[in-house]
Image 1 (cartoon, helix red, strand yellow):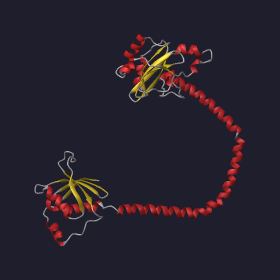
Image 2 (cartoon, one colour):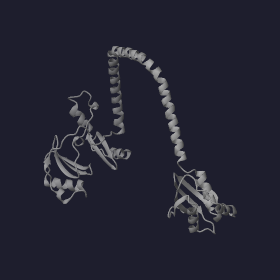
Image 3 (cartoon, helix red, strand yellow):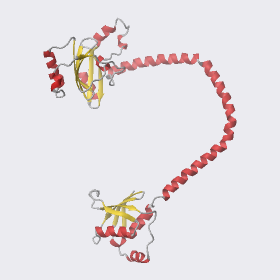
Image 4 (spheres, helix red, strand yellow):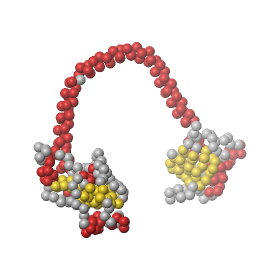
Length: 328
């Protein structure tokens, strides 16, 4: 909007120019008029023409579809070019344009938006009025200050009217207040009798919330057990766990393989324990770190018990897996 206002301020078609700015996405529109002439037109009807809010007639006509249209105005006729619900070009004549005028308008305002059928003058038509401008009108800073002063006067008048209104209904408010006091006294006994019921309800709701939170915690594998099982499973191959992301029963880990470890052996070891299911290597997600990224599903809340043979192998492993990096 600031850039649009700068362009508008550099465009001064009249000696005393006023204008509105409209902005929709990347499309801007500036509507300018001769302020002195406008004041002279309304001065017979208004003591202070500066208090009048001028609205351009095209903004109060129903927006058009893509293409060109020729509409009858309060005075004269106007040709408009619309594109994606936005007015991109317009031209006004006091009467219907000649063929030469029409060709000049198409050359200047149509650009590449018009088809071959648009090069012929459309039928002059009437366009419905709308209740408010079809796009937000914004004034430049200097007019904003003037409007702010007018708004302050309007607010002052409204505050005075509100004060008078409050004084007029003061008696009614007093009677209403007395009625409320009586109702509160009659409800006091009901509140006392219901206090215990409400307290019991609050305790029950609090207990239910705690139970639900505990059930959520108990329904998912614990990260410490997952890390321990990974350590026991990968210890024999000297694999380092660099990254770990546990979301519910979904697990993603990033592994730094040792020289004696192979990718197939790592996948086989993880699936052999029976707790990790669907172990698969994810390609293209290592982020350039050279890690082996694996996705898997955890079956159950805790790892299955290991037999004596598995325990012996884990105990005799010369190079335990090292857990480093970050977990989530």
